Length: 247
Image 1 (cartoon, rainbow, N blue to C red):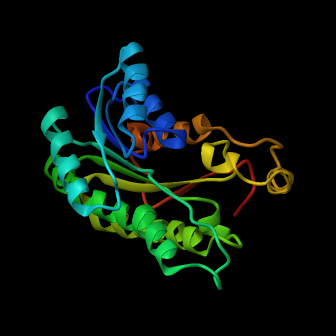
Image 2: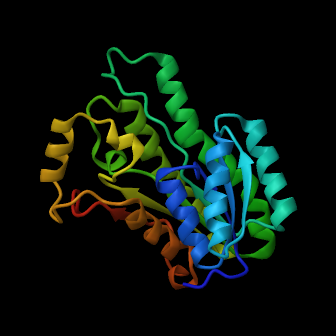
């Protein structure tokens, strides 16, 4: 899976799944544009990548801000020359039962998890169309496929990403651009670390492989979908969930 000469933009790259994706893509030879709100954390990720012989550029970005997205995509293309691979990974949770959920929490999750992906795709696609090559990979979730009590906003945003993935795949397929989604299950991240112990226990019981996934498990799937080996795969949702959801 050689990605030499390719340039990837990864949102939410400062930690967790985004950081792992950035590292895996860099290990495969891609230059990586790292984007997230926390510049200090991004600098640390960039330092790891460059220390391993890779190339990384850092961009502070709040993906809920359309103007920031436009500015960062433009800056990344100016500094790195192009964007071949877009990984829409940035995401937040604002959990609450739907009858108590505040509209602001619904809007924040939808804007960060779903609308930002549409905006990033919109900005990156013109360059991909011009070069007739591109890989768009959206990080959704098993809960966008099966729902989750207390996460109506999160589940809806992640289900929306699946629909967006399929629509974009149909729009740009004729130009040698693929658009796929990766749906992680229960993955060990800062987001899942704060879950109550009983929720973690019941989650583990639902996984046939008998373990919680790692960020590298997800990043390996992203690296594959970004490669030439996945050239004939588009509009697909690749489950990385240890068997938590099948079919």
